[in-house]
Amino acid sequence: MSASQTMKPATAAKKLGILLEATPEEFRTGTVSRDELAALQADPPEWLATLRREGPHPRPVVAAKLGVSNSGLARAGIDDALTTAEIKALLAAPPEWLVAERATQAAVRAEKIRVKERDAARAARSDED
Image (cartoon, rainbow, N blue to C red; front, side, top):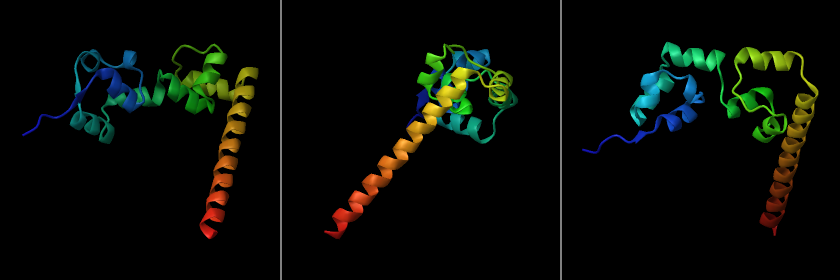
């Protein structure tokens, strides 16, 4: 019989897409098994559902919701976690930095697609040879 693997609360919070500092004390001070993590994901308790819905959200989640990169947040000086309401306010009336960073992110995505298509075309041509 093997013991279930456990993870630190910070790792579990990252996997759940939540800000560790906003979690209940018992979550922050314990360890989380893989089974417990799966249970949290499958049937989130109210505190987890509220955190996911209202925030505060960690940087990667904020960046994704705003459609920018983590680096874009850093360039804009956004170091703190943001709530859903703060994110919605930024999206409703985007400041100049947000418009510029979203354009940069769109250009990066377009370039990744172009390179992927080019590589696929090259692979198809080499398969024909």
